[in-house]
Every structure is written in C-alpha cells, then in structure tokens.
Amino acid sequence: MIEDREIEVLINDVFEYYGLDFSGYSQASFKRRVIRLIQLDGFKNFQEFLYRVKSEPEYFKRMVEEITVNVTEMFRDPLFYKVLREEILPQLGTKPFIRFWHAGCSTGEEVFSMAILLKEANLLHKSLIYATDINGLVLEVAKKGIFPLQMMKQYSENYMASGGQKDFSHYYTANYGLAKFEEDLLEKMVFSQHNLISDTSFNEFDLILCRNVLIYFDKDLQERALNLFDDSLAKLGYLALGTKETIKFSQLKSRFLQVEKEKIWKKIK
Amino acid sequence: MEKNKVIINCKVLIIGGSAGSLEVLMKVFPRLSAIKSFAIVIVLHRKSSEDTLLEELFALKTEIPVKEVEDKTPLKPGFIYIAPSDYHLLFEKNGLLSLDISEKINYSRPSIDVSFESAAEVYGESLVGILLSGANADGTDGLIAIKNAGGKIIVQKPETSKMSFMPQNAILNTSPDYILEEEEIFELISKINSI
Picture 1 (cartoon, rainbow over the protein chains, first blue to last red):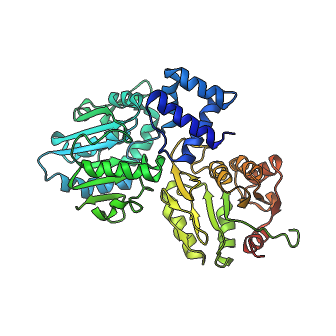
Picture 2 (cartoon, rainbow over the protein chains, first blue to last red):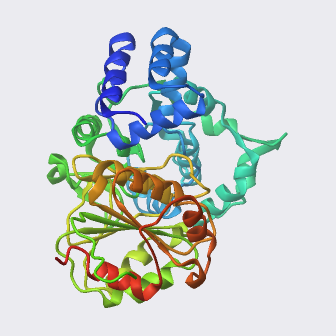
Picture 3 (cartoon, one colour):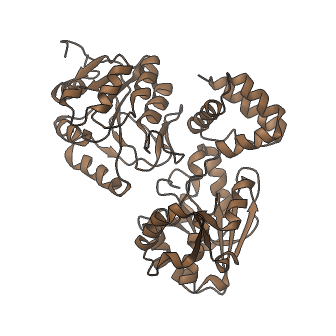
C-alpha cells in the first residue's frame, strides 16, 4: 500500500532530479500506475523504488515509459474516422496546404490511420502530419511504421467500419509476424518529442488530434493543454479528442462549436 | 437476509458484474424509486459496441436519472453512472471520475477490480460494493479492497446466479457482509440510508 504522501515525494523528487513534472497528472491513475510498476519490477517497498528512480536515469526512463500509457490502435473508434473521412477532410481539402498535429501520438497507429485517410482522399501530397509524444521510445517505434501482424485483422475491421473501401492488406507488407506499412505513408510525417505540460506551441494547425491523453491530466493541466491547442489552431480549425473526453468543463468551450455529437470541435473565435 | 440490516452512511454504491448480471439489474432497477443520499456506479463487462445502448437501457428502465460518464465528470448523489466500455473507471479524491485506457485487467476493460479498488481508496467506509454473476475472477480483489477500507461488501448468491464463478470466487476469498438473492438485493438497495 502506498500513501498519498509518498506519491507526493516521488513527484517532487522526479521534478528535482529530472525536471519532469507529474504534479498535474490525474492522481488516481498516476498512483495506480506507480503501484503496478512497483509490483511488476518486484520492489520490496516504496523507498527501494524511489531510490532506484533517483539513482538510475535508465530506470527513470523505464518509469516514464510505464507510467505514460501507450495503448492505441489503428482506426480506433471507426465512427470517429468516418466523420473525419466524410465531413472534416472534405472541408480541409479546400485549403492549398493542410497541417495536422497528433499530440501524444504514442506508437503512431493513429498517425498511419490519418495518412491512409489522406491518401484515399487524395490530400496526402499537400498535407503535413506532425506527430509528437513525451516519450522518445514510442516515437522510434512510430517512425518505423511496423506493427504486429496479429493486430491487422482488428485494424482491417476498424478500417472497413470507418468507410474504407480497399483491401486493407495492400497498405502493408507482411513478414515474420510484422506488418510494414508503405513508405509513401511516412513521407509527410514529422515525428518529434514534445511535452504538453511544459512545451509551447510550435506551429499553426488545421486539425489537432489528442485522443485519450487528457484523461491522464487533472483539470488544471487539461485546461493548460487545451489552451496550448487553442493557441496552435488556425481559425476554423478542428480539435479532436477521445470518445469520452470533453471541453465542456473548460473555459474555452465558448470559443468552439461541437461537430454534432462527435468529439470534434471547430474553433470559431 | 437478516432482518433490520440496513446499510447507513453510504455515499456510493458500486455494482460490478459480468455475464448474467445485466438480467439481474434489469429486474432490480425498474423497481427502485429515486435515490437522494448516494450515487450508484455500475461497472459491467461488455462489448464496446453496446456502449451508449446500456446507458439508454437504464435510462428507459429506471426512475433514477443516468448521467453520461465522460472524463472528469463530477460524481453526485441521486444519479446512476455507468462505466463506459473500453475504459477503466477511476475515482479522484476531489469527487471527479477519471478514465484510463491502460492495459486490460482480468481480460477486462473496464475492470471491476480497478474501479472497486479506486472507489475504496476514496470512499472507504461510505462505500458499498455488490458483485453479481459472471464467469471471470474480476471483482474479488476489489471486494477485498473495499472490505479493508471499511466498506460493506455484498455478493450475489452463486446458486441463483446465471454464472456462478465470479460470486463463488469472491465468497471463497473474502468475507461478504451479505450473500443475497436477486429479491434481497433489491430490498437492500431500496433501504440504503433509510434510517
């Protein structure tokens, strides 16, 4: 059992030693991840764990990777992608150049989903997709465009449910249990490490996707991230969140218009 | 059920279940009248496609209003909250609900253990947990956490459960305050905080 006081010590020490600030993380989830990691790595007690985090930068890296959740899939929530495909992209497609930002992209499955949508809409050539994450290791995975072959059945079903007409398997080459996605999907992607908590806006975008990332933040930090997105969105640009995330508890909601019932908001001010 | 056993000082009633538990809830909930002093949270294993359907089903079948659970939704007495599919449901100390898409626990997301343990930490003695029918071991660790935090735990009688494994496993590993049939579960819920 871990006391809240110990979690506070961990957060303070991590900030002091490594400059990474977890104080705005959703407490319930953060504590659960820490307890899970302590059990997983077989520490006898919290002190032993804390000592290792402080004394070994390599272990600290592991902690960050395990605490930040990296569960994602291609065309996750197919109906969301259907709305992108049928309503949002045709509007953005009227622009000469389109900028996308996947904030908290993890291992890149959603980035590749977007590239496939853009290719099918014949928009990929005039698009640029920025994909960022706090965790450098997942970006290395994302850049390769190689995903487990066993997931392709599910992804193919998702793709079809999102309105995809093609045979999904023509987007990748299967080899030794892995699916390597076509090189041309990667051409318009730019991967870079970015921390939603401490880094600032770095460009202006037409669509920002940040799905199932804000759920790990407390309300203050959510507000800060939403402000960062607001600062980074072009007027009439879109913000897309996870299916159970909302801006309705935020000060910003009056500046945005929700697209029907979807978790997509258009910046109107 | 022992007579005059009324649960008091309950702030949150959390109900977990898997296969065979929706039928129980669909018999119990239409008969419940409005609740004022506590909130009901329901964590069921189900397919992701059934997501909003379950909320709609409860909204149709009961007088108690159902609140949609989105991330950081405030938990308030008088309402039913249903854990959305494909997320773990967590409780924050400041009274908000949080969601989490980390790995499945007991092959399940939402996991009953995750929500029970999290609720136990925040609500302690003022939490009541009920575990219903199911064919999976999820829920047992959660009930232990509720008990350890001073809350009350109730398990559906395995003989009357459509799938007995889940309640049976809980009974083997915990000491439930009550082991009840469907009708008794209804009576117990309808008398919560009624003194």
